[in-house]
Amino acid sequence: MSLPAKLKRYLLILERVRRRPSFAELHDHLSAHGFELSHRTLQRDLERLRIDLGIEVEYDRPNNVYRMAELDGEHDTVLRLLERAQLLELVGDDPKRARELAKHIDFEGLGRLQGLEHLSPLLRAIRERKEVVITYRRFQTDETKEHHVRPHILKEYHGRWYVVGWSRKYPRPITLGLDRIEGILITSARFALDKSRRLREVVASMIGVDASAERIETVLVRASADQAKYIRSLPWHASQQVEREDEEHVVFRFTLRPNYELRQLIMGCGAQVKVLEPAWLAKEIQQVHKDSVEMYRR
Image 1: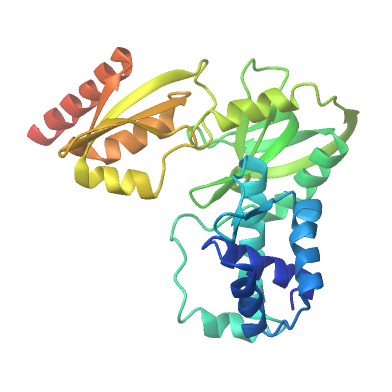
Image 2 (image 1 turned 180 degrees about the vertical axis):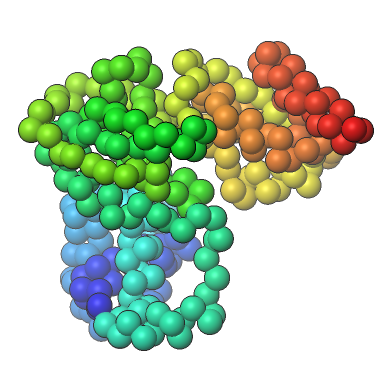
């Protein structure tokens, strides 16, 4: 499986543009990977990135370099899809190469991406705006239940895929793990896209897949200087900002829905992170720490 030449050129351009190259450096980078392009062809590729992928590569005239414009959620997803396509290029058209590469590559060991067979029918239902009936087995009870869902988004989180949509039975968005889906029936009932934008706003305002938090709040957490380095290098959420800092601590501000995944991130940092606001969340995290201490005393 060989990537088309145009797609491969796009990947090489985007890879190099992250480091703000001059036009000559960008041209040399492509040449080093076997693409001897005329200046006109390279300029056309830079323009086609905007047209084909919606990714803007800007020319910084004062510094004579090219840079990537700030990405929104959709365009960041485009880049992630291109990165996955580049991984497939490593395998090429020889399945045996996958086994050879397995000796030298170690993927994150979370989940097994089960339920991938449901990606195609769900994506079809999303594109055609058709309601689906999903037979779902819950973790908590191990019982199956049918959900009538208007699917809008497929989301990957921590090694699992989820479908996010609306159901007539619930006022909040419903999130179902593909690995626990036992059957999908695409119905003929179509739905409007009137709630699609709202759903995307909900998903963008939360960490992970728990959409149960009803409102967006400002959350302030104080991290030790060492822990702050990790939070800075791998932000918890797109809204993350530094509120203030000194030699010992950094206070981060988040504007999001305080959900289960946020609590997990905070608890995972132990004594290195303290919730400052809102007060109810700080009290809740404090109580969990107390309960943990009591558990270890038994």
